[in-house]
Length: 112
Image 1 (cartoon, rainbow, N blue to C red):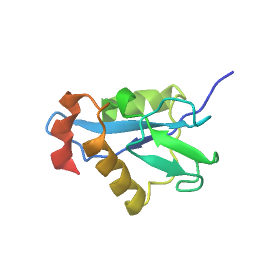
Image 2 (image 1 turned 90 degrees about the vertical axis):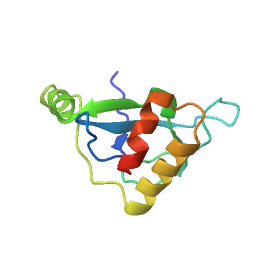
Image 3 (image 1 turned 180 degrees about the vertical axis):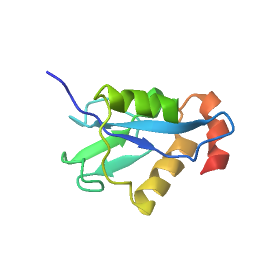
Image 4 (image 1 turned 30 degrees about the vertical axis):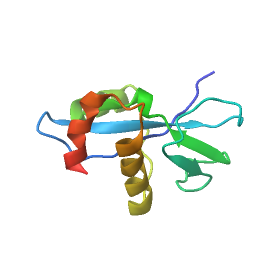
């Protein structure tokens, strides 16, 4: 079974030709341990169909346009509509506040 996961680019392309990409995951139960820095509700993006999701900052990546193109060419990336400005800002603030985002990614904060 193949599971589809939403990933959202939350920065502009930086000097290193990469952008900060945040995966989104579902909250399956309140007993689940997860990063509460950015909680997303159903329909904040058309991909979000579960009641509650979260930005999975511990699995953030810095990807280049080439990386994204390669994923798309291998059918591992499907484009959806852009995140709304409100959702993008929420994810960026969560990145600044998350204790789980690797410190190396803070260099992308200037590209928000």
